[in-house]
Length: 117
Image (cartoon, rainbow, N blue to C red; front, top):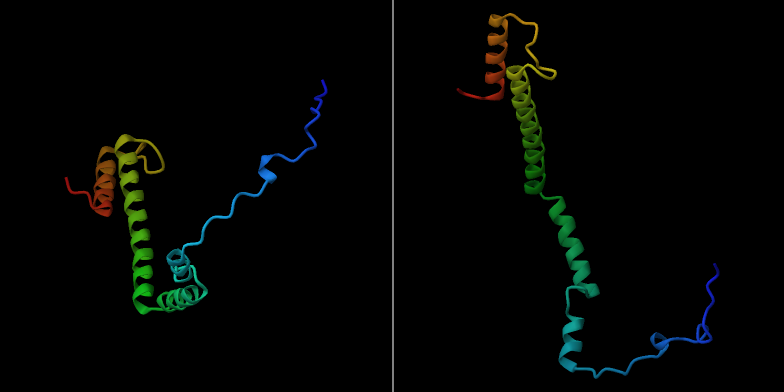
């Protein structure tokens, strides 16, 4: 089925007609020049960003964050491993161990995970 365009399809629509000129307000024009988007402010912000990225404090905090992320990841892994051992499922399953071996294994996982019961 072919679609046929109407007889007005080649004419420009209302969106091609320019709108009226809006009045210029002096206060707003001054404000627009002094906005954070002005070239001078952008340059100042870029300099401040560069200086901040090189600061020892930021580097220290980023390193601390990276260490905390790894520590938290290991804690979560240890807790899931402990849960799997207790339930007898997953990679840390104590299935096939004697009761004594299983208890020792679970106790070791509790110490590793920092779980005190």
